[in-house]
Amino acid sequence: MNIIIPGPPIAQQRHRRKNIGGKIWDYDPLRTTKDNIGHLLKRHCPVIHEYANYFVIMTFYIPIPKSYSKKKRTQMFFQPCPKKPDIDNYAKFYLDAGNGILWSDDAKIVDLTCKKIYSDNPRTEIYIGSCSNERCFTS
Image 1 (tube, rainbow, N blue to C red):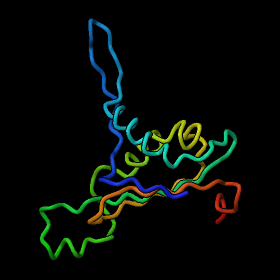
Image 2 (image 1 turned 180 degrees about the vertical axis):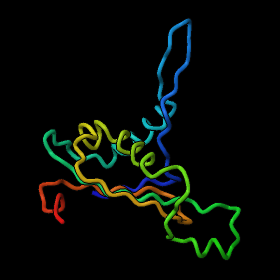
Image 3 (image 1 turned 120 degrees about the horizontal axis):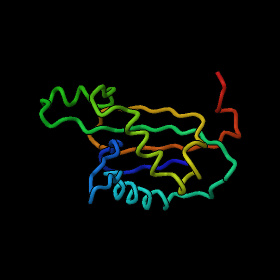
Image 4 (image 1 turned 30 degrees about the horizontal axis):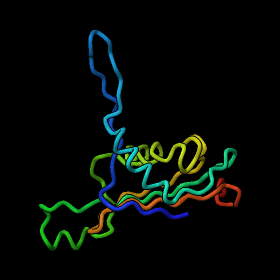
């Protein structure tokens, strides 16, 4: 199953804490954004197999900075993006957003491949497959 999410990829942020009335409250600053992405993922939702293991291939197409010259922008197309945020923060966000929608828990993902590249069309592409085939754990 292939899912394309338009727009710049979103990276997971650290949980925040705030003190309200002498009590410390933990919260996820991107909770509503995750819910919105979750609703988008529901359109592509297959039947969740409780006992299935998955492999996931994610490609994050990062927008090229506007400050780059036209020449440098054309050179950057589909080149690896070594800039922050880190690739694992992008992956964490989308894996958490898929919990209960694409898979029962992201612990069911046993093989994960990610790429972060520059593009003039920012988006996130997620390919999900079941590990019932020979894709998982082959060298």
